[in-house]
Length: 234
Ligand SMILES: [Zn+2]
Image (cartoon, rainbow, N blue to C red; front, side, top):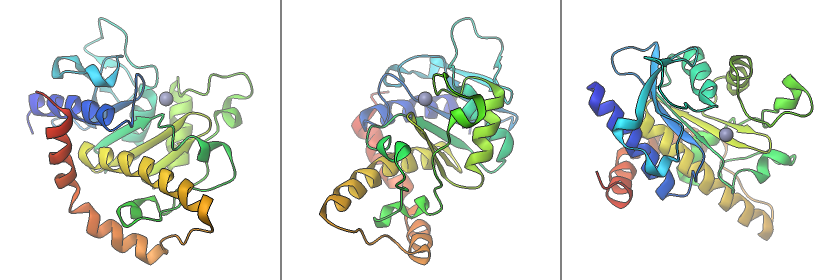
């Protein structure tokens, strides 16, 4: 993919995530640079629903913008920087404060896959807690490289990591898959909450989750192409 194509993709992902209600004024999407795996592309600090390709800038894996940004960059760019550094196979990342997910970050209730579109959630661990690293009195944000590394360590090899009182982060082999996983994480949390009100949910088994994930992974572009027509006007 060309540099311009990659910047367009970040802008498209940002618009789609806003259109789907996965991000609001806050949250962000990124993808690894197509020519340089030691860099990633994300927008300058702004509401994702307003991002255009011209707002997308390159960052080094320590979080610094290259060339140095003339305006504000995202405070939580260290989430992306640390994960790209730790996980060479990750090509796209979404960070979200989706309301349907946050309740699961503050109670002892794991997010577990119950719908066939959500097998990738198998293995999602308990929420990362900034307080365990930085103590009491923080704003819960991943605002420096040390917290970024601690969060990437917590994510491990999973596709999703929850963040206490904050939200979650989804990774994918590309930004399209990361957007898909972010959208269906929020969906699964809505379904799980609804199912728990009715009774004891029957979740996907590990084998079912693996089979569902394999089947759904091939369908990701179908969702992306629909969302492009619904939510992106460039
Ligand atoms: Zn955040």
